[in-house]
Image 1 (cartoon, rainbow, N blue to C red):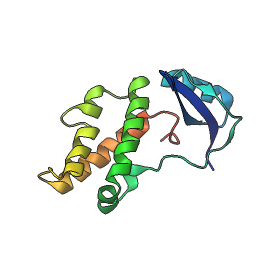
Image 2: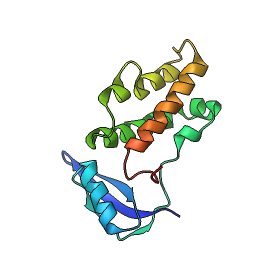
Image 3: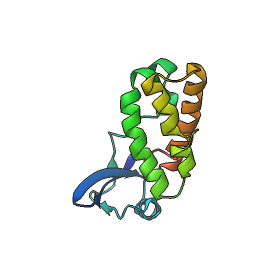
Image 4: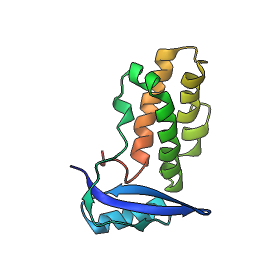
Length: 138
């Protein structure tokens, strides 16, 4: 069971929702502060049933079959990691960054599919660790 709170934050005129995992309000508040999204807490501590999957555990075939879903989630994970300064922009957008590597799979332009998939998995693990509050701490 994953405990946490539902949160919301605003970008321009749009309101977005998220969650922060944690079993006590002090650690949750610290995570919210570190995420740097100016979030507000919208619930009491509750069971968070709809969390992002651990994409690093997907098989090569699953990564390929779910690449569009993965790309969408990577945008959010990258946003959290970059706003909290837990990951470098090069690791997200650089020539060897997660979005660039995944774009090779999406476009079918990778020369070595196995190597690209291995790189994506390693980068996914790092990115998920940087997306504080979204995954159970490793």
